[in-house]
Length: 313
Length: 178
Image (tube, rainbow over all chains, first blue to last red; front, side, top):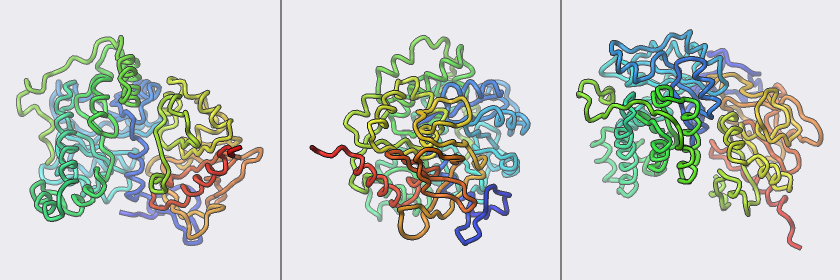
């Protein structure tokens, strides 16, 4: 878990007097997500998109070859993006850059770590590489974000070392219904947990298949031990404000921006709605004249085998 | 953290939120995001005048960048503190680190410094007082009158000493009752 900088070829002046430096600790991995709180993370497929996102005020970008809407449309096996493309995107902006690896594919995760990515999303949007095991994320110096549909799934990912959780939602649809369902499930269970006695918690931990220590920590904190973002189907400033009001710490927008009519304007509006989610006059103002939203797919019309959220467990 | 010290806190998102405050903290985050939203929602001048009234102001990480006069690139800042800053000075997230720090006016064992994609202060001018350096001399905390900056994140630790230092600074900056 904690690695000395010498193993990683770290940077500045190692301390000689015992006040040694540590890298890759949980505090650092979770801490970066803390710095993203209240912000918007946008999917981008080119350096130009990344610059538009940064100019709009995105706090981070997710570098991809295809946005989820295209992955959904084109089908086939969806893998990690070309490291050359990810590097181009990393060079084009100063905000942190994330990239996706397949569930359980620690090979892809090591490649992303090796090119110096700031955050890895072990994502159900890509085709899973392992149907039994997620990546053992404690072993990495780079932090991971993982999707979850409920509290049990969120705490299992945290126990594997995830430093940030997002709702799975249903990516690439433009339909916010699943993100709402998952955020409500996670946050609702935390509210129930807060009113439980210790003996009830231990039964609850078994029911949701989560480690008791993390269940108790969550109850004591009154929130997840890591930052929780909403993701999967958000497309408008109103969607962003809705999710923030439900109690998430920030927003991922995937296909919703660059599959819309006017990405720069919509990106800026979603950032502003996320910052000022408590001020409906501002959310109303920024919702005006955004042009065509992405064409959506109703999640309820999708056949079960096309749903992405069921990947991972 | 401040609530633990018995201090009343509120969030500042719009200029009106600054009314009635004794002190302001500009937190960590992405300084580019920060600057854009502050410009768009008219916070730049109200924040400048808040600081210029002599009220205590603490910038951590992105907040440090935001207070400084020179960041060597085209990005709006308040431009109030006589420091030259380098953003992401240590590299990417993988180069983020923790280190024990000796900080002037803070007693006791080394303070746990959490540096996340942190900036550094390359140069100070005027009456800026350097409060903390890394072993190689890199400046990571400083003060100029009512302005206090840290490139690390005391709020991500359980150690309240830096917050206590700032509360004392805020007390000393309060206008004395006539």
